[in-house]
Length: 582
Ligand SMILES: Cc1cc2nc3c(=O)[nH]c(=O)nc-3n(C[C@H](O)[C@H](O)[C@H](O)COP(=O)(O)OP(=O)(O)OC[C@H]3O[C@@H](n4cnc5c(N)ncnc54)[C@H](O)[C@@H]3O)c2cc1C
Ligand SMILES: *[C@@H]1O[C@H](CO)[C@@H](O)[C@H](O)[C@H]1NC(C)=O
Ligand SMILES: *[C@@H]1O[C@H](CO)[C@@H](O)[C@H](O)[C@H]1NC(C)=O
Image (cartoon, rainbow, N blue to C red; front, side, top):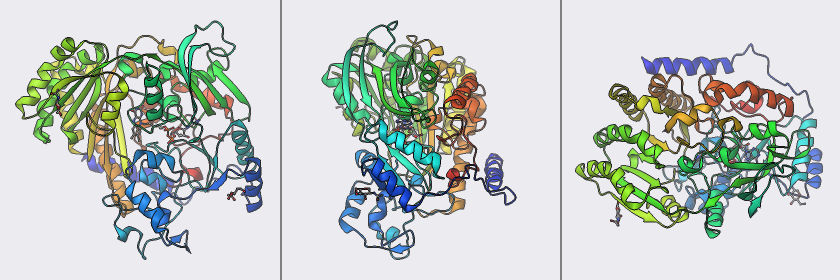
């Protein structure tokens, strides 16, 4: 029954979108951009305007209906590095979720077969490379003048603007058909500021901080902080951006139980607002915008050029690697103890990832000593060993050494990139773990969710028990503070899947996450890792903070020059830039 309910919900949603009686939206009434306009923009930005092309276009012998030469060497590079996080982040025309390079709704795409990127059938004679959702043009941003020029351009022409940093977004908010993109990738400066005071804000104490350019990625930031003997709360992927969607949207970290979320620790931004004015944004200057940029989401309030974040003296880590033979029954055997211990673990500073597809629970702790750490996790270790696993506690001298092992799969595993999929998630509150009955109900829901997903994971990376920041200082949904973990799950589709197959994947993910929505009715969802069909998304993503966020959006971007799917104050699904969503 559920599958029909979910399918019907999506179907009515889609048929809404395609309602032939609905007038096409041309809310701007602006002229389209001509070749001469683009050339003039190129001049203004110092020749750093480029055509955006799907990363994979080298493999094909047509592009947007025209014959072209295949570039065998460039194609081989793409195929070899198809799942490489760095190669993807370095290529403008690549996105972590391959389907956001494509027009999902029309299948206009340029996709390789992710099951085997070398498969020649995917780019053979019968296959044609289409622009899809990759922006038509991008500016390789070097500084604020480029941003000001692009903002001016889109205000005068009917061209949607997107900001692309790493392209990791799970909701396609950094690509859009027919758009101009600001590519922040090369703004990658890193600076240690041991006595940082926000500008014109003498009331604030001096803090140990780093300032990073908008394009900096976590691997580089972690190498930088480790070389200065510092820790920072950052993302669990080498190439997620440090100052883009992650930070502005909240940012959870394997160090969040100890240092809070990214949004808790940001001290200042340098931005350009939609009116073309460069601004310093901190607790004293533009404080409303500062609050909005601490959880309200990327791509919505301003173009960020750099961010300053608090850092801490580096701590060593205790790491529990708890393993069991990969098997559904073992997941079901491990979860009850994990649920029972979860509140205690989070309170003691443990963070980690529970990953059935790896048969692994990886836990890290910078606070407990070795003996305390071992005593806490021994029952979990014993259980996993009884199931046939090899498990232990080890020590890492600092976060970077653990993270390097994690990234390559020696101690946990960062999530894969390159697949097309329907991603959904749910924040799971502490209160669901209080009684035997509530844990039993939750276990059922988790197993049902697991049974309806291709990939399933618990992110135990919440700021539970973290008290250093007054929660009113950030616009992160307050429910995060009473949440123990986030469940994420995906259902994939194939590169040559039909529209029906894709709808089925979305419906399956909706069905799976509904089990968890049902048992957590007052909770919500992380907008950075959410269902594109999230019900009542405003409340789910921002709770009581939504109204004020909307007022701030009105103030800084009244005409919605910055717009993205389910972002604060978005224009709604009929806007042409959203035509590729189903
Ligand atoms: C493999 C993987 C692992 C992840 N791990 C984590 C994790 O551990 N913790 C976590 O919290 N999240 C995680 N995420 C989710 C991540 O936070 C989001 O994907 C986030 O949107 C990425 O931001 P980005 O700037 O890197 O990516 P992009 O896709 O380039 O941008 C995302 C959004 O931010 C906007 N944006 C980017 N730069 C700017 C800027 N300079 N100014 C204004 N807006 C900007 C874009 O317009 C877009 O709306 C992960 C995602 C992936 C794919
Ligand atoms: C912009 O100008 C540079 C330098 O003249 C040139 O290399 C580039 O191709 C131009 N971009 C576009 C989109 O024409
Ligand atoms: C800990 O267990 C892992 C396997 O999970 C193993 O690779 C590693 O060698 C073990 N380390 C110690 C010190 O026992």
